[in-house]
Image (cartoon, rainbow, N blue to C red; front, top):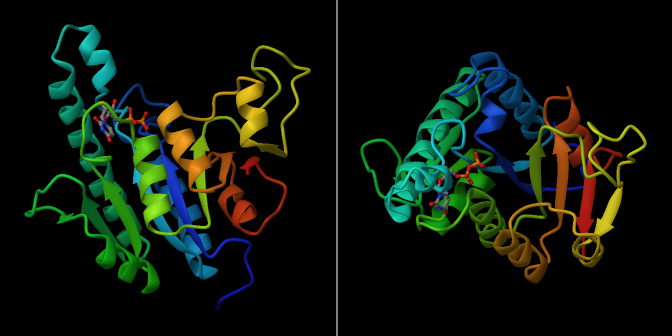
Length: 239
Ligand code: UDP
């Protein structure tokens, strides 16, 4: 049954690390099932969901560059890592009875459709979860930028950035117990206070396209549902 939610179409950004759980690298099955379970809750409310997944749990181009690899080559490897995560997510969604499609920014026809905007929008309208893999398809970018890009292209109402902290704080809550969470903050205030939400390219694109961002912790049960229902969860970065 479709209920009234604050957002009708969302772009969920999951970092690669979010899939690791307590493991040192790779994909933790319990963690991924916890995340897709939360996505199912909002799909059941009638929310259309696009997902951009990172690859940092498997490979990160910037760190490989530090090991003297050619940056562009390392970045393509990073993008391939996001495809592995996307396939794992699709499998997990389907195990819960959800319909999911992977669209990759790099062509690899045997395992995923190549990204095509009209088709992706059609899937969203049909209630399928669309997982956008391979970032933007270009080196020197991040999956945060891919999330901003796909969020804008899909005309999403908001970008939901899942992190391991339950929002944005006045200081690092792990180091400073007096730190308080911002319920809402404007793009300008975030810049002024030098609060890092995501990399500058991604942040600028969101701001320019007026794509608001909610930063929230996905490890907390029911957090995603509370965010889309407009409850006080995470931090809303708005225009
Ligand atoms: N990447 C890229 N172009 C993109 C998106 C990602 O080259 O448009 C590469 C880059 O090497 C990056 C890696 O893929 O380090 C994994 O993405 P990201 O670091 O954003 O993943 P996350 O931190 O979200 O796990």
